[in-house]
Image (cartoon, rainbow, N blue to C red; front, side, top):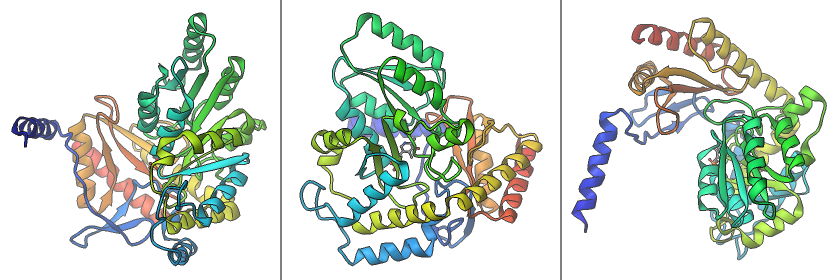
Length: 401
Ligand SMILES: *Cc1c(COP(=O)(O)O)cnc(C)c1O
């Protein structure tokens, strides 16, 4: 027992509490893709999930999960021992086809994918160039890597190029990596992929794009950032992105992560990536759900994406027309910048009373005085649900601001 440590922890928690930054876990049960109940059976409309296509409650996804449960509720081991289910291989092949890459490897979470990929591929003397607003799992991957890390200003490709040039002067034997979110998780903006590709090609860098909020979310068929730019420019950058990382936990309605790329990368990761090697594989049911969701996305992508985009536009328009400070963009991640953490918290609490769940995002997830409501719309929200929620947000904001 260490009383000094325990008292220190308690004190830190109290400081968080006093600054409106203490986090708690609030239990929910989803009764549909957009509605959940709490432990008192109070029902909420939820505008904060990553369940972008609402597929967590699709009958085909649930059916696939139930069927695969027949093969055992757990995978029984690492993929390298006894945990390599038929389901995992099937999903990997399906993802490779969807992303049009040679090969795919599943990890247990998107978080572990970033740790596992960045950690395994980068060596001492290598340099990782990382966008300032990359997801925490990328940052943690760069932290456990032995490589040097250079953070470039958010989406600032001239800053990136300058940093690369500087490194080249002192260092030309090592490998350079550029890592960026495709869609940034807090602001919902999209990476400048064509410029990143150009720089990666010019300086022989390996380009890694994290598609967690892009797969199933942008591009005409929901294929992600590469497709988004192909729709825009007609240029297909698939082969210029060395590795696409993704998650099964957002639009794909399950849990897990994946990386798509050339076979040589996948074979190397199977041999060298510790988060892949030393953790029990996902259960067949978890993987089968993701595969069923992916099949639905492949069959109905255009339709899903057009609902998602329509809902996104409606919510963005309603809120910004009322004078709220919405970070501009076109993705369903809609940050409503409020400023002080306590005000963001208060608005979120008031909405909760009204039966609407929208998360307040506070430091350290976002910079100080940039606290916000981070609202996400999904494809299965109805027009009425969106209008009702927008109206409540506007009312409460006008009352409290
Ligand atoms: C959510 C997210 C992850 C983590 O994925 P999980 O499957 O939830 O662990 C990784 N990268 C980005 C950009 C994310 O938004």
